[in-house]
Length: 258
Image 1: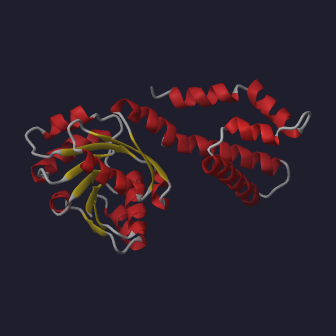
Image 2 (image 1 turned 30 degrees about the horizontal axis):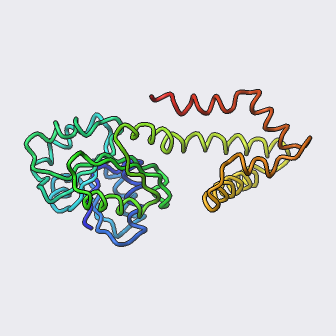
Image 3 (image 1 turned 90 degrees about the vertical axis):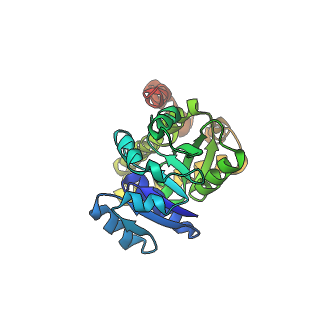
């Protein structure tokens, strides 16, 4: 598929790099920032880069708007006459609804409009991506977009009301996971490991825990019980986390954006 990504920031760059790893797409990235484009081109020579949004959109089958929410209207005004009914438009702009996007498109003949939220793990094809199609988009067209984003990780096709919760879970969640890893690393250093070794241990532990759940379909409590022995270190640590309000703090953190 011929894909144009307008925006070379954190998200646009991550998705471009991830899709490029797949190797089955022709990718063009357009941005006003030559420094970001140059870095992307250096890392991924196969990707075409330019500063002309209109040329990028005109030549693409699917256009991704990977710009800040306050930039969306300007970019749409710039390219909307090029978005014909045979093309796909995907917006990454958090909080910009499909109704708002359609209003910005005004008299455009575009039929296939999508609101999509990936996360920055897309760069390594490990994104958790949420996809919402505008009402009336044919199922086969939604499947095209779903399949595309499956190239960079897991996909959930959902109702628009779940897009913000999805973003809080999987995009903000990246930062929360990083904060936990940092804390675990600091604990390791305090107990005698060098920082790089403590971080490696923390990463592998998290990967192992995630794989246990993914491969078995089990519940987290099942595995907590397996490693928690009476009077042991694990139950003491879990109780300390509970006393400090760990569960409540995590839940509140995820819900702050609602």
